[in-house]
Amino acid sequence: MKPDGKTVTLGVRTLTPEEITRFAERPSETRFVLDERATHRIDAGAALRQKLVDAGLPLYGVTTGFGDSARRVIPKDKAEALQRDVLAFHLAGVGPPAPAEVVRAAMVIRANCLARGSSGVRRELVELLLACVAHDLVPAVPQRGSVGASGDLTPLCYIANLLAGRGEVTVHGERRPADDALRERGLGPWEPEPKEALALVNGTSFSSAYAVITLERATRLVTVAELCTAMACESLCADRGHYDPVIHQHKPHPGQQASAVGLLALLDGPGLSRDHPFPLEGKPQTIGDSVRELELPIQEPYSLRCAPQVIGVLRDTLTWVRRWVTVEINSVDDNPLFDPGTEAVYTGGNFYAGHIGQAMDALKIAVANVGDLLDRQLQLLVDEKYNRGLTPNLQPSTDGDDPEAGVRFGFKAAQITCSALTAEALKSAVPATLFSRSTECHNQDKVSMGTIAARDAYAVVDLVEHVAAVHLLAGCQAIDLRGTDRAANAVQRMHRIVRDRVPALDDDRRMDADMEAVVSLIRTGALHPIDDGPR
Image: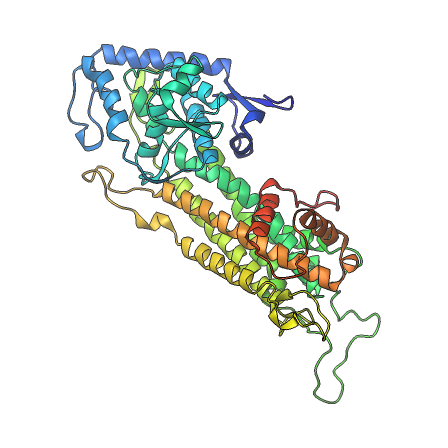
């Protein structure tokens, strides 16, 4: 682990989405260990589970079948074989493998659930899971196959399969058989005791993993959207008076007010954007005696004027989504649950991903709307009818004698790409939770679709990150055309960061690599205006 690494305890304290995302993106920087108090609770839960099995009691998924087969009681000497069977028939996932960052997050979230001590598993199982986390053994987990009902049964089964020494894992970018990877590190394989396989797969950890990564990346997008808007205002010499706090005091949504304050801070000082044209000081434009055109527009298009109202919705959505996701990742979400204090066992439905599904459906709609806002701003930048003297499609500036003037197209294709990305984001924002299905012989007759909602939200954030990247590239090109030294300080700083990675467009060239370079800046938070005053 690196010297700046952080040790995080599981099982007692509240684990945060930020901590999980930090580990998922940079696994060498965080180490997870069991809290000592948690180990005692885990041991007590496992002892109670074994006591109830030894007593010959019918326990769901332990000495009974699963789902609609729960009425079938099996002999207690078959309980371990039942758990091994869980690991076989749930390996039914399809589609491309989930991103490594999502699988890492799912493993930590699952360990945190089991560390709460109510799942009836042995301490050794949780420690093995954390050892795999520490060695960054990432199993191949197909993305599709969960309706978020009895938890993420199928995807989580691939993580359980790793602990049993089966399947494949990625180690340092190389796909390896899981048993080899475990053996080389002196680990496993795990042989499940009653309830243990079910405890690993019967929860919301996979959908929650998508949710925490999406949450943190969407949080970064808020700042990026405000940076994009500020750059568009500077590029178009627009009216920054639309962000005056007096306006937003009359509609005091916290997110809207915060975005307005942030935009004014980014546009502070001398720059290309202008103040509202109607203070009584100076020489305001007056109506006069005849119809005429104003020298400057009295107000900007909605994509600039209403930016705090659009971005503010995302800000406020993130506030309650963070609260819901934090509760979910610190919950015991499998079934049945064991209470050592009363020696009781409870069956319920904490594996239902309803809160994750609702949160992710709302978040992806808010993110897609911000993407659409940025796409509209980009249209203003590239269209010579609206970009206030900038070149058509932001093509490099040329003089009238340049023979190449008619065969340069600047951001024409990039704008089409941006429009396609935006359309796909908006299409993907349809709420997945509305599409509940009855499954498993009507035992799961009302399902959450939380996993699909979370995957969709993750995809929408990815799309809008790319929309923002095109916007930032276009904005930097526009600032180059206006004169970089004329822009506001914060915009100049952002321009420098982008230009350190991507040169100005002085002739037509392929732009796909440029876009990915800026997406990397967005995801790492490199564009955040840390040097330009409070936000």
